[in-house]
Length: 368
Image 1 (cartoon, rainbow, N blue to C red):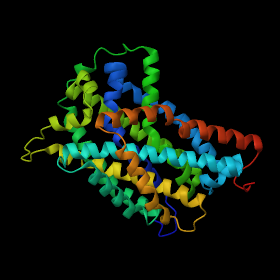
Image 2: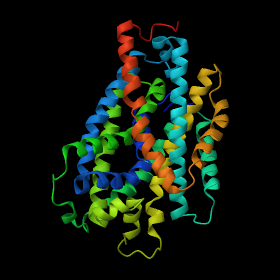
Image 3: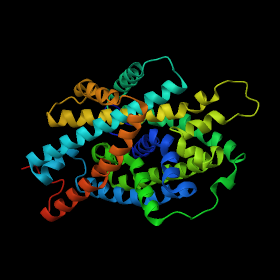
Image 4: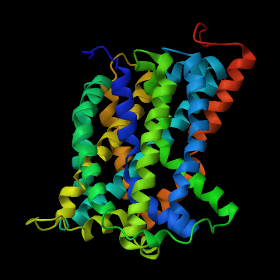
């Protein structure tokens, strides 16, 4: 445990990354997979894992070469100051847009399940203020929160999954291996983009106390999420059917609404069962706001990191309220993920890593 020193342990880092990847994308993943390849959709996370492994190698290859340095610092070293600043601004804008769409989908889900009469803007502002309260104390506060929430998130998930498994109709998964190879490749890519929080490693990796083990922690977090995605897709397909999964906006939520726990006397059980996603999405949005504010503070050379949190929040809120409806928000979210998501997961890290090798620069050098 680290106290007020902007450091996190490998255990905290692994849990944070796992919770961040367990976000809103999980709720819509069965819809994406069933739309692309039908009942073979549950195989896509396994192929997505292979693509995600490439992301990890590119990201950790770069961060391992510049251990202890922030993204802002080593981007200037590798690309020169002007280009490094430009790339950092691009990264900042990308994170703000991503978190904005994530926040909007989260608010839509909360309005449907919990607060049907509450305006979306109120839900989003409450979430943003809650994230501010957490991240104003730095990355170590997020690490501690992750250690607490992991039990409240994954224990109920496992219990509900076990209950669904015994009542599932596995005939919904037949016939198998009927999908076109091109569709499988496209679906695998879309699935791999759900590992978007891996890009936060470019920034948060500088705060890990044992940076040599970052790659191993990333792989373990990716493996856990891949297994969960496979199970969730299988249970959704067997619970409500492949066709219904492709029609519903929130197929996992529909599955939860159809569950009746034995001996239960509580109405609207999906509210209790969706609680873990609320906590997990909270961790993801918190991390996104923190990384964005950290990039701003380092670009402006501020000594205190938390002074830029509040200025970042309005931009995220504006992106979140931009779509006029759930349909547009969902469409913008998917298009942005598929077209821009891979930029800082693979393209930019791989290019910067290659340039650093060719220029023979590492963490011992300073920006020109």
